[in-house]
Image (cartoon, rainbow, N blue to C red; front, side, top):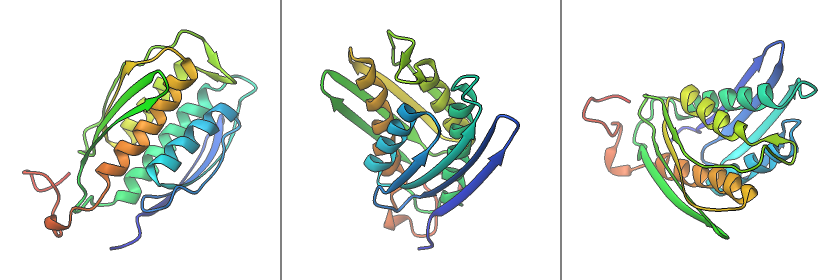
Length: 197
């Protein structure tokens, strides 16, 4: 099997971003977005999904964290899509229910080429560290649409805002890991009655 590694770079007046992802990695990450709490979230995603992830961003954080986090989501999604290529023999679907203390988070993905986000976690504070909590949803929206993944993130329980955010990122990593695994019985085909994803 060819290495499922991709690098995507994007430069605008607001951000300059480089992302490299290895789908078949071991959870090694080197992340510097300029937003430390977001770095912590991305590290959880990579480590628990066993993706090797390098992400560097220079963004206009003097304005706020919005452009940085949204654009990192766009570039990460593009890198995931590029790394998966023609999606031959991937399991396509993946889900995970992740407990984190009082929080229970479910994430399900379908790597189908049809983007959609269903996201219901609820935050009771405006910020966690230096990250606006409303940006958690914006990140997942950006990833789902740029990677063309159907993504559901559902909060089953939880009170602590840090736990809720972290559980969402980790559950996404675990679910995406399942969905990107190779199903040997598929050979060179894709898991679709249409013949393509």
